[in-house]
Amino acid sequence: MSIGERIRVLRQGRRLTMQQLADAAGISQSHLSLIERSRTQPSAEKLVRLARALDVALADLVGPEGRDIGRGQAPDLAAVGLMGGLAPGLAELRDDPTFGGELTDDWLSLLSSLSLRGRRPTTKRDWLALYLLMRPYFADER
Image 1 (cartoon, rainbow, N blue to C red):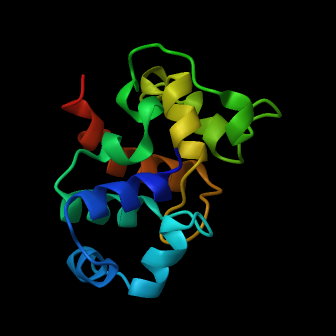
Image 2 (cartoon, helix red, strand yellow):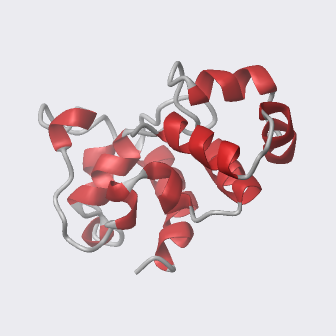
């Protein structure tokens, strides 16, 4: 199930209209519609806002891979394009002596599937910002 499908199921389960959820998450109804139909991927910031608006853990939106972050379960790396190498800057972050040890294949898979402020990171600094934004939401999941 895609992130958009999960959002739709959770929204409908709470009997929220698209407009109500969009207002609660601070996004437009048309953008929410695109997300729910998997026409666009939400940025990390929007995922956090949607999770809060739906009153669910962020891991519930990103799926089984998100719930297993840090637990050593192998993600489908081919599905997110990691088999051909990591995105620019992400490989540098993986090799960083401070944070690299925390970046399991699960984290690399999740990070590679997201964007920050509507764009994909390209530098080590951008990937680190995205990782640090996401890390607290998975710390309680362990």
